[in-house]
Length: 204
Picture (cartoon, rainbow, N blue to C red):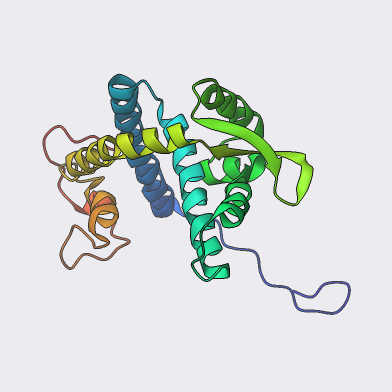
């Protein structure tokens, strides 16, 4: 295809076929199953919904990334000056935080307000732009994140293991778990209709 400037244009991607649509539905089903398990576990055990844990995770990782970057640029130096630079660098703009945890900007603003009310995060000026609003994790937030993460990881492992018993979810769950296919010798794109479902299995 040639555009008005006489340049060849890339053809548009082909539409997804039925098998791809089915595999995507299975991925969404696995995600929904695991997300429900994680949310229920964290809410019941720690009073913290999954969305708020994810925000702490993103802010905590930004803190770690900034700490690594500061040590690299200061040759491993520590002290008040390096610490002040690090504190500013750990702040994430609301839009970046929204992108990291998959929420809309307006939802993240309300989420950060809830974390702020519990002393787990605080608002800050965005690095390089004092007019933009950002958020960063507090020492209490880092403590909560460290304490809750083992519960989160254990629940994630349980949910993935449980999905291994469902023929329609097993291959995807095994890939998340190990990076390898659950079906020895199976083509990654094998349609689940070629496998016999176990009793109680339901299609997505």
